[in-house]
Image (cartoon, rainbow, N blue to C red):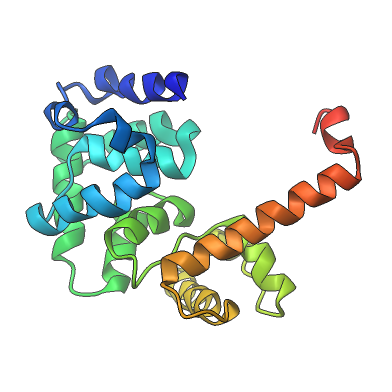
Length: 216
């Protein structure tokens, strides 16, 4: 985990700024990254109506650590003002998302203006509005299919935003209904992801991790 935290701190030269907001973060709180995101980061967003680059890229790392450099390059490419400063870009982006009138507009901004794909965009919005959005994830898609729901595995490939939005709304509703427990949307997503991970590990053990031995 120490190596993981070092990788997070290496974002600083990438961001091109001194991440002052990081100085006030207790590393013990940052260790539990998901709790940090859905607690402190969400609270700061509700207070400031924007995110720092450090908080924003913490969401990126939580969803897919390997994608952080690609996301940074893409943001600078999509920035119409060519600021070359990720702190300024992220502040503007997240402020723009806050200002949108509804959930559809928020997702559209991230996909069509900032060039994100559905998995990452939905992760960002799920942290900021966890009662309205849930993370689009292939594991969850598989569990929903097992439960007799629609097959959502190709949803992110749709070219039409209107079609993608309608499909994502069905996906969110499927997550809500697939877990028969009185828990939050976030916990229903966790349940389905955990169920998939548990099922895969059980299968791997039964098969003596044959896929790993074969290089998969």
